[in-house]
Amino acid sequence: MAGEEGAEPRPPRGDRREGERLKRQDISGEWRMVGRLFAALLLVVAFMAVTEVLFR
Amino acid sequence: MSPVGEVAEWILAFFVMAAVIPVLVAAAQILTVLFHFEGYLDATGNWLPRVAVLIPAWNEAAVLDATVDRMLALDYPPDQLRVYVVDDASTDATPEVMAALCAKYPGQVFHLRRAKGGQGKAHTLNHGLDVVLGEDWAEAVLITDADVLFTDTSLRRMARHFANPEVGAVTAYVKEGSVPGTFMTRTIGFEYITAQAVARRSFNVLGMQACLAGGAQLHRAENLRELGGHIDTTTLAEDTVTTMETQLAGRRVILEPNAVVWAEEPPSVRSLWGQRMRWGRGNLQVVAKYRHMWFRRRKYPRVGSWTFGVIWFAVLLQPFLLIASSVSLLTLYAVGNESTFTLFRAVWLTSAVAYLMVIAAAAATDPQTIRRSWLEALFFPGIFNFIFIWIAILTPSMDWLLEKIGALLGLSFSGTQNLVIMVTVFSYAWLCLAMAVSYAGKAVEKVPGIGPPMAKLLLFIGGYGPLLCAVTLASSVLVLRKTQTTWVKTEKVGAVRIGGG
Image (cartoon, rainbow over all chains, first blue to last red; front, side, top):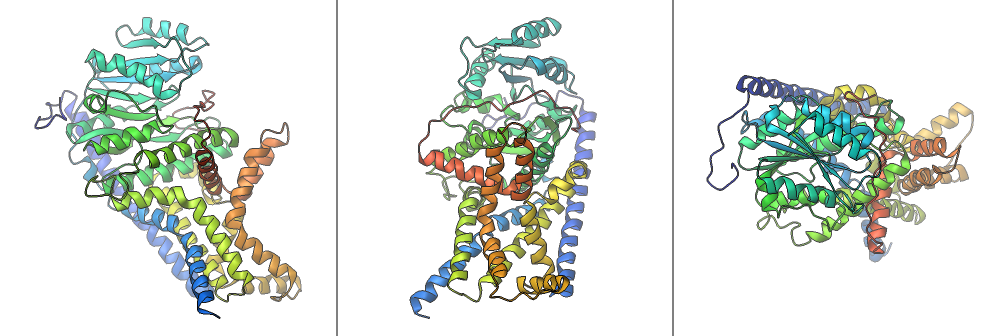
């Protein structure tokens, strides 16, 4: 069983193509999420900067 | 002013600003999510272990059919999947429903019935674990709830992490899926984006997890055996204890954010209060149980790190920090300290930035849910806190605001007027009062007729965030008073649907 010290993981038993497709899909999904988060945080910074200039 | 007075004012100023510690911790966690690329998938493989699904059930006849059907229709090899329903001596039609399901799926669905029930979920799970681990068929055990619906590829996505021998357990992203959705369930939906999709991604980046979701935890069978083959029954936070034990044994716990499951969460303030009191008391029991572990990184890598300890205690101490901040503000105002408003604005400006960051992070990580819960997201802190946040962002000072309002109304406000003093005292005290108002919402909800709408109104005024702080405070009081620990099952009505409402 994988998890025992020194043991190698067993060879995969499922549909390899489906697993790889999901992995590719999730990798691109995470990159898109990080991109959206970065853009959203930039918006927050820009908003705070604008309010600082306009209202202080 | 005497040196003693000056020192006292500095100490009070420190306590005022201490309220922003949990807020800064939350903001820092959001920033770490920027590093959640594909790294968490690096060591995954197309790994499909034999999975025993363990469903504890007490009077769940209404939902078991759909849950078991759904589980066996997952995108997972049928011969690699078995479902064990552990019936905690149900008094409804659960035995009949299970007999039909066992006949429908011979060799795949099993009914394990306890003769005597009511001891809680952990005892029920242990009954099932005895059987599942004893059979030696399962390579992985999925612990879930009777009302949780897994999306098609969720199990496959979770299981792939076991290709990495370091991984002991994987949890999924639990989304609130009650239909029709209510103010409360949509608010919980928003909370789960921040508490799961964001915070647990952050923990993935940091290399540890605080807690596996109770309704979606996939364990390597070997991991459970090494933990003694049993779930902890000494605390109310068995999921957290399993998470801690797994990591203390040197294995990793991971969130698979793309494995989405849908669950039904409490529809009312009272039922939410009961659930969160259990969690709150459980978390305090965890603090005591692992008192040797906190902030000892060398001896306990990951969970003993300062990072983990600060995040854990920031949440736990938040209500106490808010009270200290509020009391300190009022004291400084009473002694005529000139920096009081500056400190107040600093607290709210920091909170405002964190608030905008939380909403931004929620929108970025789960746009689908935020489209449904945007109103609940905006008013998550409560209407007054919402106002304070926007005052902090859009106005240079309270005096400036009152002057503008006075000009609009044709009145002249000055610092000596009673109204100004009242508004100021109310503003400074609100950090505490918000918790009391939210608690009042829980208290009045049981009043027939007017109770539920009043509870909703008070929650809207006090805020969901302050309600959670009130729960933490109340659970601390119960632990300090050593009130007996009892298991109270969260009320469920079988309203969950994939996609939510």
